[in-house]
Length: 324
Ligand code: SF4
Ligand code: SF4
Picture 1 (cartoon, rainbow, N blue to C red):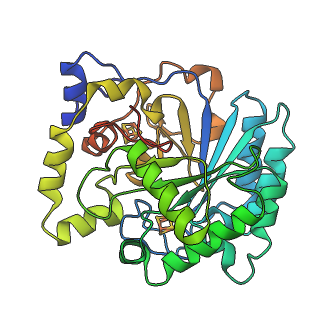
Picture 2 (picture 1 turned 60 degrees about the vertical axis):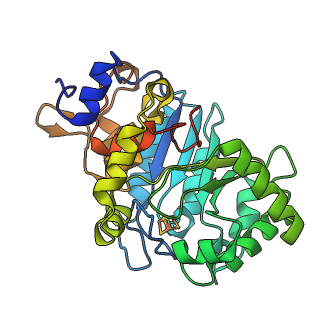
């Protein structure tokens, strides 16, 4: 199956003689569903409180059973708000029981840790030594509330203070990283400079400490694409991403060492491709994780589209922040 050469992004890669294929899998990213307590405007998942799509226990078991047969070292839990699926703790406990041990990341929106019924989740995460990567698009209330909703800034600050009180961001076994994404149709600024600003502001005003800041570019899909369209900025944003194409980012693209799986067990090259329904296929058959031979993933071609320019613009962007 040859997917390269079918879209403007793949043509750009071809111009630069940059094939895009999977390397050894380092990360299994599990998107457990679209349920979330927030409805942020930049959300590429269209997540929200009314979404019904969540990973059920039977699927959790199939995913973890598949993972158990591999040596993939890291599991990245995302959503929605991953903690909101009823079997979140079951999933974490099953993952923690695997041999060899796996490093587990929870992508947390912070505010969920304060919601009624979730008060014991922060201690649960600390007890299981789960790394937290938390969205915090700014250190100022105006920007955070504009992007994520009224009151979200205060909730995020309280969530961070709670995590610090449990040792997150302080104890090396409890890493706490923050994610910045632009509050509009522009690229993130330099990651190191923003990290220094965040550290200074959060420490000074709220006594908060954290490990690293990851800058992530907003990809023009789902709710953010609608927002761009409604504001007449979609074409300009696409042009901005395209013009900022940086070939040096391609080697580090997260789709190369990651497999992404949906709440139903379907497999994708990344979470963005998941939202665009670009499921892995074998001829006519759509593939689920349990159809995949882990040894056959290396060298597999990655499906691309125009949205991929979001990952290669400027310093590049991935779930772990800037690529350069
Ligand atoms: S960006 Fe994150 S916190 Fe915001 S709605 Fe989407 S999943 Fe929820
Ligand atoms: S959106 Fe980014 S991570 Fe996903 S396939 Fe495209 S380049 Fe790779």
